[in-house]
Image (cartoon, rainbow, N blue to C red):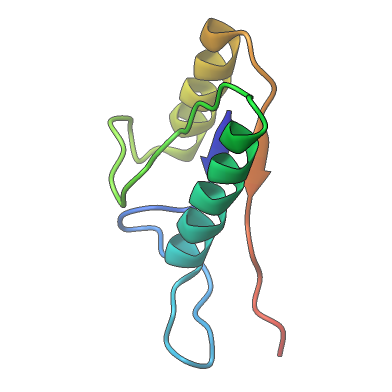
Length: 85
């Protein structure tokens, strides 16, 4: 399962060029997923767009992602980026 960190209202860090962490994370997640699929892996994403179906509450949000990984019986790769000053 590939979890692209941040989404929707939670934009995360902002780059010097105005790009949001949530968008960069999603782009990376989709590229990694595409590469893994080309090697024959089954890939599950927590999101493929800027929206998700779960709560904005951080505790519930994390539990939902953990439950999804357990349900799909898969390992989880969480992608986050940070801004360097």
